[in-house]
Length: 239
Image (cartoon, rainbow, N blue to C red; front, side, top):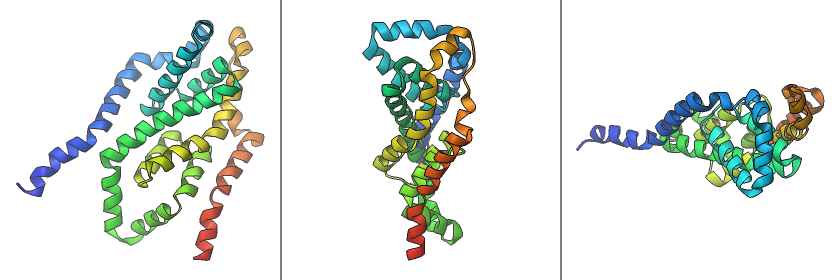
């Protein structure tokens, strides 16, 4: 049997996790898209409070699991989930539950992309030579700096950051650590907004989700992102 005869089945075996995630995302988007909105939170916040008060541990586990699914399937509800975490559990330990859910979901997506085509693409880039291979080698030498930068920079979408990490051939432990720590500042901001959401929900108002782009929030986050690049810049000057 030739290599070309083996390639299609091999490719199918690698791509099934991504295909499964894509199918689940389509089904979940069709079935639950209207339940991952601020309007749904307004409608159900009292029931969520009763659930939390009646079964705190089960509510925590359910919340973290739902948050992880939202992130793994890249559904448009992560911000609402973060606000809900703050609303239900307060800034502390709400921010911990938010980070746990987001990190778990990101890890599932990371592994699916890595298994699907991340390793194969990284290997091809390494073997191709030229400028692209040089850029990838530079990224590989400075993985910690790049990982923290794409997590801390408020302008890099969470989904894109997950894809970049998978294509950089990042070790799983490094991905998990950098994700959990890198998203913590932004998660803390939105969890704080969620913690003060009770009165807003009661009056039918809408929270200010643009708070993360206000100068007193955006500039410190951007400063942390730039600071994460310092080791890479120093290493480059030494070389």
